Image: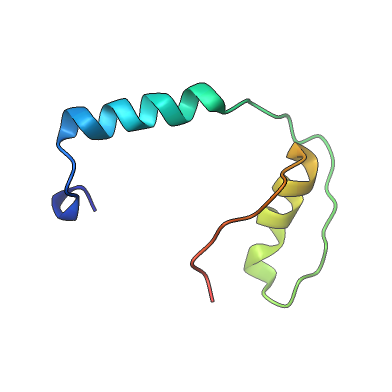
Length: 61
């Protein structure tokens, strides 16, 4: 992925630093399995609920 990026390594590092500065660690202390149609997506929904996410952004069809 880095080879196809239009950003330099330094720019990618800076972008990641900016992104991480906006993130917060959230302990997942329970298992709420929503049973979505794709079983492989259940953990993502669980994390979004536990973390209080306002949105889930994905390219997964």
